[in-house]
Image (cartoon, rainbow over all chains, first blue to last red; front, side, top):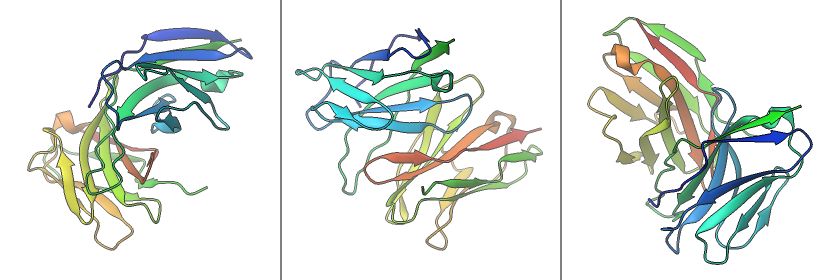
Length: 114
Length: 110
């Protein structure tokens, strides 16, 4: 699996946008970029994923650079409940007999403060 | 919204005892996983399961561990003879295009 690099920690003011960067310079053509988060000791929560186009859902937006070597997760209006560890993971969704596995790194600890 | 359900939420056991952690994945999902997280450490992959067989397992998943999907709905992780170092939060996950995780079972081995 390709590796990712994320800053260990970030701060964000409540109500402001949180922009979390991720480098994945060795990503392969069939690998998607997935973002998960873990609030305290809860199970990881899926946020969003994409291949090469920018994606948006009710939780966040994902911006992937044209060369796919980096991406940014955007939480448009961060709240205190968004304080969590955010994981950027590259993952070859094959959809066949070999689905692969998500490999979690250390992630970015995002602290949203009042 | 459908969710992955894990029971029990907490399990305390004596070293050397067998434990079974239970999971009910989301119906119509095809891929099933167990992960664990030791306090303060990363979420670690244990095993993946597809088409009623193990598709991949980590070095952690030794002969003391086994998984089953006995009735088409439940997905279980058994630890035959628990050790102190098995104390961790165990997460079950299921998915197709994306994985959904349960809220975990906190296993404490005394």
